[in-house]
Length: 120
Image (cartoon, one colour):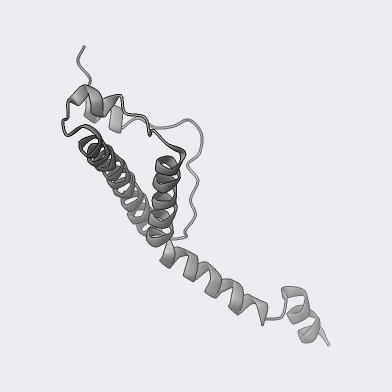
């Protein structure tokens, strides 16, 4: 069966696309970055699988890689920790910007307070 990967990549979800930033270019850049990060995370997990299989048996087959399931809770926990740290590193700048906005707003009067002060 043949798959048209270009057509599949162009498929759109139903409904309105959510935007998190005012600037569309910033939004597009974040989406591209997250897509690449997702691909890198999959590659990292696959490399971890290869390393663990080589360490365990010294040999590899595509089938053993495709069918690998982490053999211990520690291995699964290690992978999950790596993923959490990876996402935190990628989104660090977004988180810092959000914190800066929150900090700036914390010292600012509310809109109601500004209106009241201007009205008096």
